[in-house]
Length: 190
Image (cartoon, rainbow, N blue to C red; front, side, top):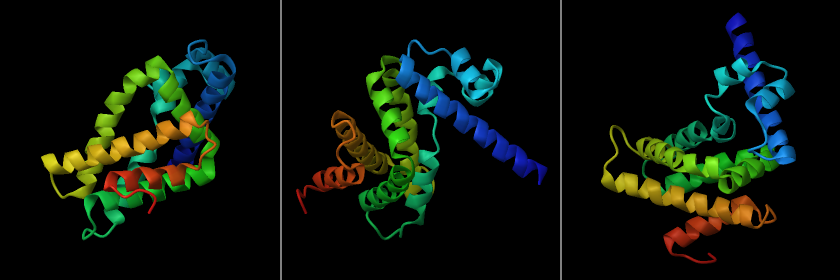
């Protein structure tokens, strides 16, 4: 019981830090916002900030999306083609996030793509996500082909996200994801 309370409190603090960071980044800019200012806005010390996020970049880049996608891929029938499994998982997982937290998602993606310090870390995160997606498709270590398929799917998703940000969120992200995966499949407009 006490462990549950502590975990909920930690989750609330983590969420509050991320919410305040995003608000401050929008108001003041990423570079002008300090960790100390984020922590103060969230009502915690800067040392507490670092217990949750090792760097300022992590407050934007750290999320629970990868575990959602991995669980959704593993829940798909193993008889489905790997790209179809990932597509369905992305559509389901990101669709749920989009429905419940669209504005925060747009802000995070926009910040990541437009802030040099965050873009520099994107490659590192992409490799880790690719590996997670590839491992979710197979039992054991993924082979070269599985890693290629996971990479192609991740590039497809990233391109849909880039398009969404370029349109300033005016397009519907789930539709862009569908269009992107249709293009990967070589089918336009179907």
